[in-house]
Length: 463
Image (cartoon, rainbow, N blue to C red; front, side):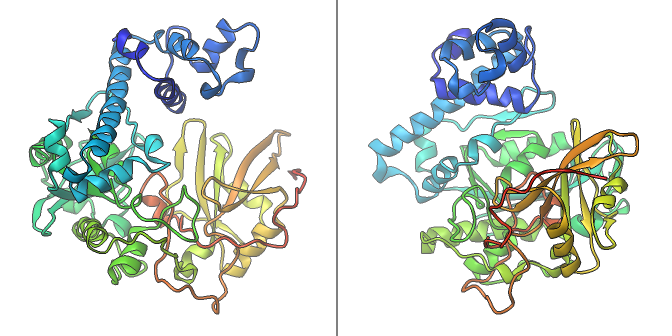
């Protein structure tokens, strides 16, 4: 195991170290920063970016982990080696590569791929599926498209409750309700279309889904999906021969890290509306839509950037702000003290908890009130990684403590001008972490520079 790590390129070790940071993993000498503080008396944690450290330092940290983690790290190295082998094969035998495989490669080249498709498959319950012989895979164009619906469980995790798979002819290969086998806190029926009653008597489990998928993907078939990493994560299914429809199109008016929603792409690429505003998701139709997008891409190219229509953002989403990186000790109702108007916490959308922080949606009576509340909020205005406007704010509590967090707009720029209609059709969302982001109103639009943008406002505590 150690030999495989030692033989890996530095960029691979950098990604593995970042993976440990993202997931809070610790070796015998603690996490990455603990290791630096203990072993580097000169720089310590002042130079904590793995990219700025030598390969020897990165390797020394990774070998402090247990044998089980070493085994997993070796799998990551092997996956990178497979990617390199694929790149080399495509260069040497470009005439033998299937058009579908070229979209697989396009997916892996996306700037967000390595961040989103490094799964914690070292954990219990994960299934890792190899793609088989390289030459056979490169020449094959067989595809399956998948989509899942998830519920929020009592333990704070998500669980799949429906899974659908179709082939390239849109023939249904799998359509099953799935028993989460643990307590459900929120069925999200308004989004998933699945209720508690629907799952009564259902015996099909996650393990059964994994077995079915492994059988369906025999001989290296390509798995297609929109923001597919979300589905694979909840399915605990690590598979590398994939096409992510969020990654294979370019966008004229979105940052490189952002992507359009499935509904948006269906409008602009395929010419139809996948679902009307307020309607629940249809798992089967979403799987079909992902396959339709790939078919359209293969047939028509769509190599030019697609412009996302900003006026297609639903009005209900423009009436919200998102508060995120909120310390878990700060009750959500206290957030309302710093906002003008008459805001409320949107109860139907669950707060998303991640370790020591959480995020939640704040609802206003109309778009003007939401815009005004954001404009009047004291704090330094910046942009998030996808280009949406946000402010870093401080809130002074009654006990004297000061809590810091971010308040972000749901769309790019300010309220869209009804006369500024884009040439293309769809509504965008980012490729955030989970599908419930769509319900949270996480739907970006074209950026525009506001009068206040660019000025460094001094961050101050709000009493």
